[in-house]
Length: 324
Ligand code: PBG
Image (cartoon, rainbow, N blue to C red; front, side):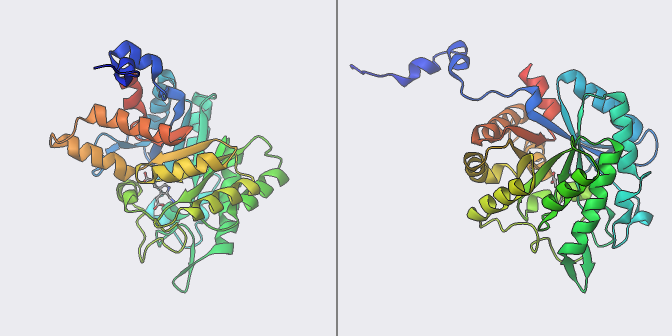
């Protein structure tokens, strides 16, 4: 048989494959999400996220040092607010001595070069488990944005490098940017969860922070997964309002959205490989239905190939070890 072109030549062995690989993962691609709890010496394994933990500040600082040693340059902080601090205003979220504020300071003191990103949304602080303030059974936009601005400023005061609003209220990026400017936080960045879908894949995360909505769902603020063009609208608006980095979330069921966003914008794109995506791989691996290590690398590579410059993933540490 005579063939002019044989594509298998470039797949012949591992050396040639690595020579022509279009996508490669590296430690600085990853954002490591961390769950923080009150107390000391607390290490709690999240039942629906085996191998992932919620830690008190002391253990979180140790973990951040280890991540830094592995080459990870950014973490994304989430805190589990104590039940007695929760209310419908979310005011604990801007308490200068709150758990988030203390964690930011402790981490920046220990590893000043680590880029500290902080989740901004009311759900962990809300007695209703919603990302915003509830009035007559509705999540009200504008009063929520005022609360998010206070929360963001208090993160900036505590030393956060990048504020990451995950709430999907309208106008919050512009309001947060304006407040940062007015208060001279000209070096604080914003990573907007721009195309965040109302997804069942957040289930294990809500176990981790005990933040499941007390009534209804999040469909009046998070996006409908039927929609694609709307993702571009949301993202372009966030950039106009001042976002430095934009995000698509979840990742694997939304690779088409990641690519479209990547093609439409001139800022870095991140993707959040969320808790349910972590749990699926862990569960299948546990019963021997998938090879976990291979599933992790294939999943993360596909997210990067789709167009993500940064990937928030609970597999960050594992992936780096696998990459060798
Ligand atoms: C809070 C928030 C959520 C996630 C990140 N920030 C949950 C939600 O919106 O209900 C999900 C992350 C994950 O599932 O890993 N607004």
